Length: 239
Image (cartoon, rainbow, N blue to C red; front, side, top):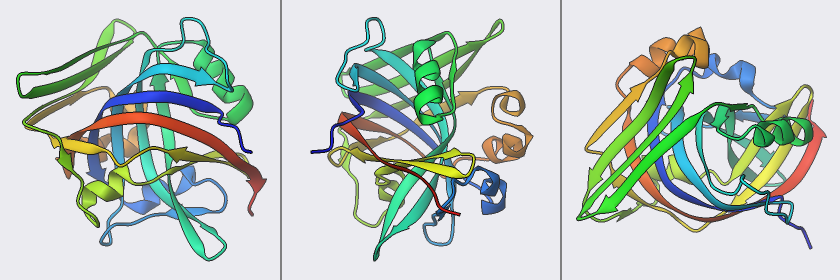
């Protein structure tokens, strides 16, 4: 029986989603994957969320169980037999604990970076807000959203399902590709009434993303999150 490499509760995922030219992310494609499209468009997303009760390879790591995570990711697919596995690729992932990026880079090749981080989540009186901040030098940068009302079921075939429904993760490791299956129930979402992203994109993600992330986002919403189980499926050369 396959054992999980990670289990955790992912909560209050703030997703800010932008159109992008597929050529701008081609260099980040892991071997064997291709860019995935929805209605002829593809996207990058800035995603901030909370890890709770994290267990890595069956072990709770002291002082590394609850923390923030902010990533820039895009969407891919990979052929497996007669089906397509739809997944995400992280370009950079920010976390506040140094042991996380060290472990992730050594064993999985994940693009983590440790920075001071803080967060504030409010969910009461018909209002939901999520604010994730990270410090580079003396400056705090941020991703923040607010919403109202009850969380909504994601419609089948919708843009929101495309963004939240990629249940595989791929990492480029030179000529090799690490593949992970991410299992979780279908999330509900709150469409954002307001959103705020403030960062020096050129130094954080690279100059190719400056214009992309300065444009108006296609969508912004908060997903409620759930318990998540991650399995490592393969690490292979695909070409």
